[in-house]
Image (cartoon, rainbow over all chains, first blue to last red; front, side, top):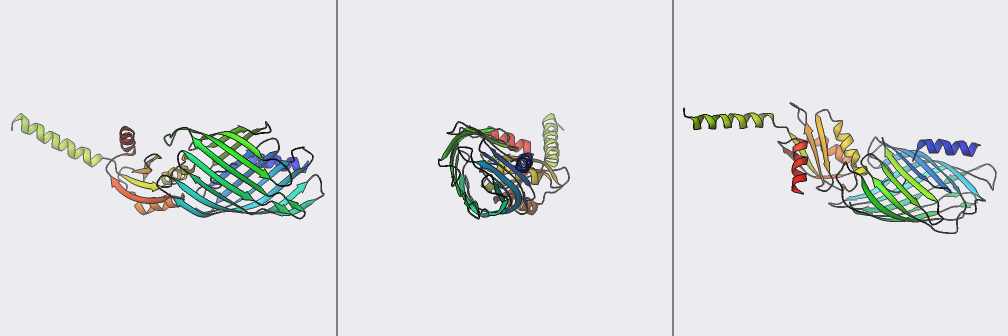
Length: 212
Length: 111
């Protein structure tokens, strides 16, 4: 009941993909990443061009559906380094989160900490990203890694929607023994960011971002 | 005064009048603009400046244009600061006597 309430709250908070994990200064960004065994939502506020604080969480379960985890955390995102090039941009991001994690195979809540790094490189036609995140708590290790590559079919004007094909491989320790691979159609507009795909377990995935 | 002289004077006055009413814009060349979703911060922030009439972003040319309201002056330093706060680098800034729509049309025509 409590877990469902948390999930509903997070879903309402909207939420998350793997592009820039924060908006511009004084903006609020919502992100979401949803599939049958992974529901992730975040909302954060950028108090500078390089720093954002937020609230988020993940509801995840094992491949055989026997174990589940619900993480709720306060999160800090820091743009460690950005290279603004004439036709490209590259970034190094730091994540630091603390919160609580619950599971169906242990009682109560445990303190969790979730440091992570993301590096990405993007042009108007090519996208590459790698991220690593530690999801740790007493007796729990759900470290996570992902790789993304993508290309856009063509360049567009600023106010037009640009379609991309993105391929993501991600893996989480302790809950799943296999690497999830998801080809996704990404649609980027100046007002929204959406990704839709089906992973190698034939589960639908939907990611989105919105900046206020 | 013959008709040729009258025509020349009329054309000169028309040109002067046109230039005095021409819109003023600040045109910035910006590095790092690769994604419309990420760049929206530039448009949102610049649109809120008090002297801004219109903003045009061109991802292909890496250009941001801010058009001034009639009779108002754009603050180049404020524009640069807003673009930097949106996460990008300004590498060139120039003031031109064109509207954002005219610059947009010129860029489309030049592609």
